[in-house]
Amino acid sequence: MYRHIYKEEPKFPTEYPTCCLLGCVNVTDCLSQEQFMEQYPQIGEESTSSFVFICSNPQELVVKFPMKGKHKIWKLESQSHRSAKKCLMQPA
Image (cartoon, rainbow, N blue to C red; front, side, top):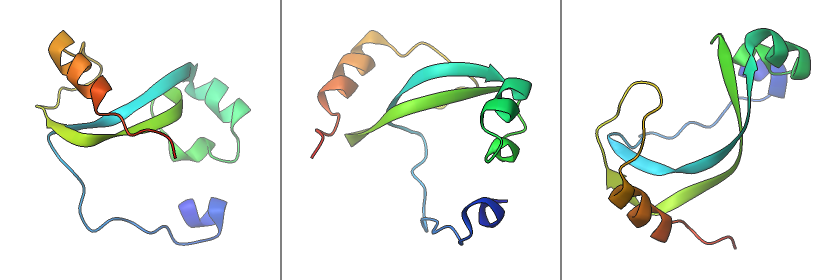
């Protein structure tokens, strides 16, 4: 699918971080699959979920915080949130 849309082979990392908080994004919208396909037909096939989060402003943490993953969305503990905010990379 990726090659069909972007006409190139994606470069994947050899390893992915696991069990840690990587950063944050702004969730700017939540669309049903139908709305997503209508608004983003060029990438609509990238997701098969019932709902799709539209995100912007990704920010990586300088320090990755060890954390047990939880399925779906959960509230981040206040102390973890404060610590993570201090470790966001500053824009260049």
